[in-house]
Image (cartoon, rainbow, N blue to C red; front, side, top):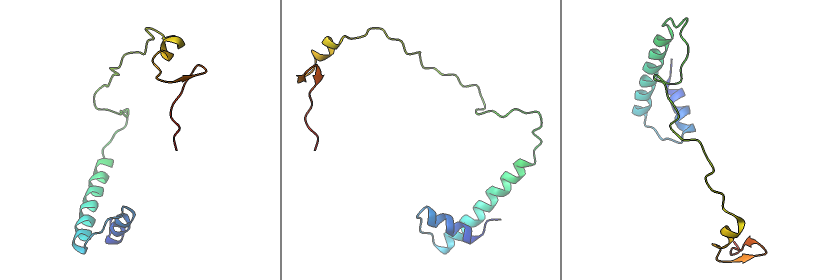
Length: 93
């Protein structure tokens, strides 16, 4: 199913340098993985809904709520430099 040329091509795309022994080894290993996937494809899954996770996952984050809005004057009071109602920052070169 997977030959050494395929492994060499993928290694080149991934910028990996493989020896001939590694190429042979990975060719066999990838072939074994694909055989296992083919075996899994033979399982009858009629009537089974696809699911993204094996157990239900719920969002544990809280909703964003505005508790207090600062006024512009309060925010500008923290500015080390202010010009015409805006923060003044050093120029970036």
